[in-house]
Image 1 (cartoon, rainbow, N blue to C red):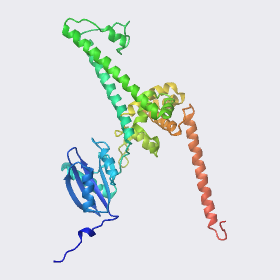
Image 2 (cartoon, rainbow, N blue to C red):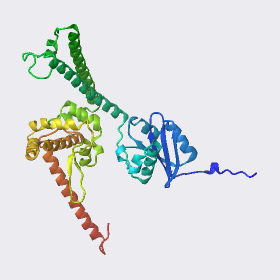
Image 3 (cartoon, rainbow, N blue to C red):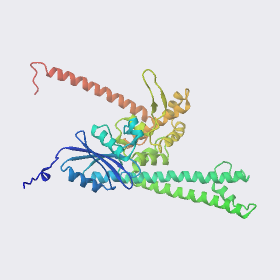
Image 4 (cartoon, rainbow, N blue to C red):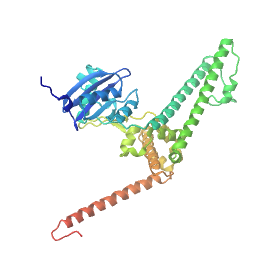
Length: 392
């Protein structure tokens, strides 16, 4: 009986295979496409090595490209796939096109099929992936942010308790609504019953504990920032309105300010660009961009209110636009403040009051120089093409 060695002669060297993944905790839905054909669709255990073994066994020598939605699992799967030689990208879930039929008939395999299809067509673009060290620094900043909410929650619970039982703190102890340490010490009261006294004491102790933890976490975060990003931190602190928390947030969330080629792209990530919904002759400009980094935008807007008090240039800019709408004007200031922060970090220079005017003048001069060079280049090129001209 004749036998062939066809199985051993299969080689897909140089051929691209596009893998769409829908990752979950207990399983991965996988779709593989190549040359416009769906080669396979299956479900496998959540393991990058198992996927690579399948690809090498069935499509040896190919170039493997994969994509999956960024989600609960972070970037660990992305790093595993890249280490194994699979060119993977992380995709924002909202960037994956979906027809009405796909929305109404949604399964894991259908999702992986859509990802593989659009990946093969080149319609998907990966998001920026931070290094693991930067992600860990960002997680510390967000943990502090969560602790701020817990402090606020504990403070509101205590104030609600005092309001319910008509316990008023004397103005000699605390003149503001903020419950200072002195006010908390004064609240060492005996209520009508032991249960009420215990409840009041627990509210006070809870608020003290949460504030102490917030102070410790902020101290640890500042130490990490100063150890690894000290110069950038000092540059940001020199910008009017930007305090320690805002500076630490910008460094932790953005990391590399130079990864934005376009200032509009940078401001869009911060949510400081208008949201437009236009069609034909109808132009609708809505509020701030909803898709953004929600951790930085509130900090920058809050910093802008302080900045206009410290910087005459920013206050003049605010006054120019506040006539129409003060809320929109402060967002414009926040955008300018964010661009200033980016500039001082990239140049690693402290802020100067005339920084914005100098930067604008430098950009104008650079454009004029580039235009002059371009024009002279065209002239020289045109002359060199004339008969009788020989380049030395």
